[in-house]
Length: 437
Image 1 (tube, rainbow, N blue to C red):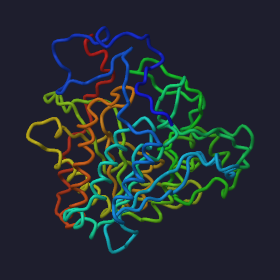
Image 2 (image 1 turned 90 degrees about the horizontal axis):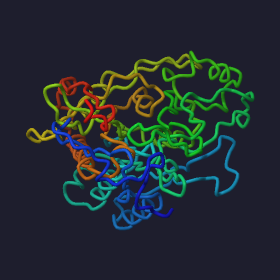
Image 3 (image 1 turned 30 degrees about the horizontal axis):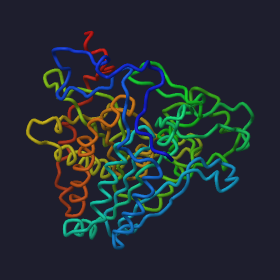
Image 4 (image 1 turned 135 degrees about the vertical axis):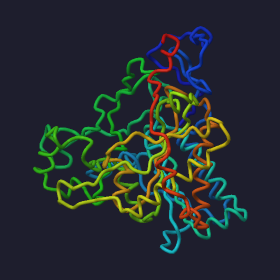
C-alpha cells in the first residue's frame, strides 16, 4: 500500500494549525496535550503500513540468526464459507515467535492493534521484537526461561483503511454480515458489535466519518468457549439468540465471525500462555482532583466476571492463582513506570468492566493471567504526537515483566500494589472544550 504522509479529517474545513489552536491560561493536565484540534491536519507518517510492517518483520527475522521465527498464522477477511480465491485471503496475520510452546518455560503472548486506529502498540511491539532478536546476555537470559510470542497487528484491514484516497485507519475489520452464508435464516440480526454502515468517530467527537466498509469490532468477537463456531451450532438456537436484545449484547461472548478472532484464538490454544497482554488506545484523563498529571496509560488484570456459556451451560471463572499472577504482572508494570514525580508514573486502573467477548476476557476465563494496556489517545485525537513517549509506556513495563518471569521475581511482587493503583477518574471528554470551561 502506498504510504500517505498526512490524514486530513474529511468532516472539517481546512484551516491552519495556527488559527485552530486556542490560547488559554490554566492547563488541564501536565503535560497538557498535545491535543488535535478541529480542522487540524493529522500526521501519521511515522506509522507503518501493512507492506512496511511485512518488510520490517522479514528483515528482523533474517538478521536474528535464528532467534526469531516469523510465521503467518492466518489471513484477514475470511468468509465463514471459505475462501473463493487467493485474493480473498486478505492480509496476513503474523506471529513472531521467540521460543516454542515449551511447557517448561513461562510463556507470554502479546497482541497489538486489534483496533486498526490504535497504532502505537504495533510500533512498540516492533521495538521489542528488534531488541529480542538482537541478542545480548540479558536477552539470552530471558529467552532461556521465557517463550515470547508477539502478534504485532491483528487488524490489518482497519489499519490500512482508505477514505477518499487518503489513509484513514479505523477501529473495525472489513467484513459483511451475510447470515445465509452460514445457514442462518435471512434477516437474522447481526452480532451487536457489527458496524453496518462503515463509520468512525471523527476528529475530537466532531461527528462521524462514513467510509462505507462494513465490519466488526474484533475485540468483541471472542468467546470463553474457544471452540465455538456458528457453523457447528444449532442454527435455530443461534438465530434466536441473535434476534433477542436480552442475549445479543456485551454480557455474552462473541460469535467468532471474524477470521482475525479465530486466528488469534488458534494461536492462543497452540501456545497456552501463562500471561496474555493486549495493547490498546483510549481517551484522556488526569490522575486525580489533586494531581493533574496526564495519565499516559491505564492497566487492568480483571475484565470478566464468572461466565456461564448459554449454549453448553459450561461455567468459566478466573482461577485465584491466575488472578494473583495477573495482578503481579500489572503491579510490576506500574512500578516500572514510576520515575520520581514524572507523568510516566500517573498510572490508573482501567474502569471496572465485564466483557467476556473480548480477547482478554475470554483468555482470562481460560486460565491465563492478563494485562490490558490502554495508551492515551486515538489516531483521530493524537495523531503521531507523543508516540515516542507512549511507546515507552508499553516497552518499559513489558521488558520488566519478561525479566520478572525469567528470574521468578514476579512471584515476589505484592498483588496489593495493583489493588492500590488509582481507579479511572477525571476523564477529559473532549479536549477542544477545555478553553470554554
